[in-house]
Image 1: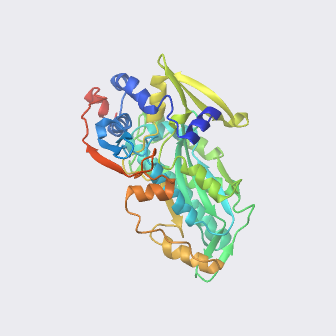
Image 2: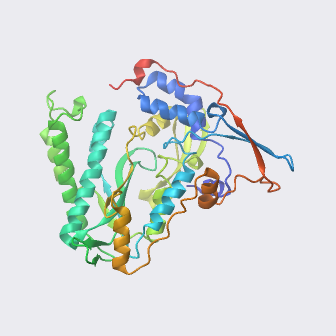
Image 3: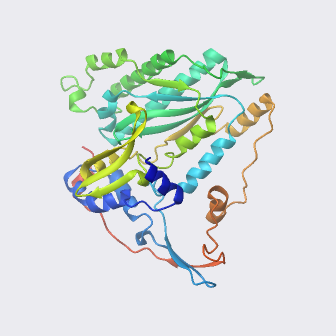
Length: 411
């Protein structure tokens, strides 16, 4: 994020250009000339309608000082850069409460770019191959925990599908506690603070598990192959391509987080409930060109500016729309949802630390949650701090992104 963007984000100032503005101006033309899946079309509609009269809202006013404002409802779509701030804050608070007083590691499992075309071919492939990414990486870590530490480890995985310039880059970020619960539950087995598992071995096992799973999916015809990946038009993949993937080193990263697990969770939390780009990174949308900032990882993380056509910008963004119901955040080992509460209590007992503070179950309204997680009291007038009166506003029907119906079908 640029310095200007950071200042706007910190002050709460509305960005001059938003993703919704780009979709409003250019998405109709894009849908007329490109294949757009139904789920992608739904995301575009949601982002355009977010916090507008199309979704309805409320009029609030203060009888004491005459202050008045209109608040329109959010679309609550997980791909929208304006939504889910409360959900993100709640998620982050829950994850920080789950942290144990042990060292943590930040692992990253990355798929080679040769698989991008296969993953993005259609929604069926996307769901199957990204599920396989979670399965291969989680089984790899659980096996290393069992064989190297002699117990059950716990970790959280977050899927990212993009790089700083919105290009496809499929990888998992992992927040991993250094240590394990013994299989009989009798003790905590401590892991290292600077070294946990050998990265080269992780890479080899992860690669083998993923490619074995890919071969199984192909054999069972659970994915569809693009023509250029099929061998002589058959249902198989060219053996040469598979051998190349088996010989190529797969990227796996494993290091302690620079500023501790809380900072790592804060970094991951920026995109747990939104996708690819924030509005504050968008600089301009003029003459059919979209300009946005990005960090160049190959040039000492310097902030730079990219300018691409609006068509290409929309094309890149829509590649990161996930299938309906697909889970981007998953927990494993002693953090698995079905056993998390009991397992964390056991871990804290074995480590000799008090249990974490329970969440206030009485917090039921959005106003109470906003006050707790974001420090905002939306029931008081921002001018005189008096009580606000509220009136419901019904949605105003609007229709956008029509496009030819054939664009909705998968190829």
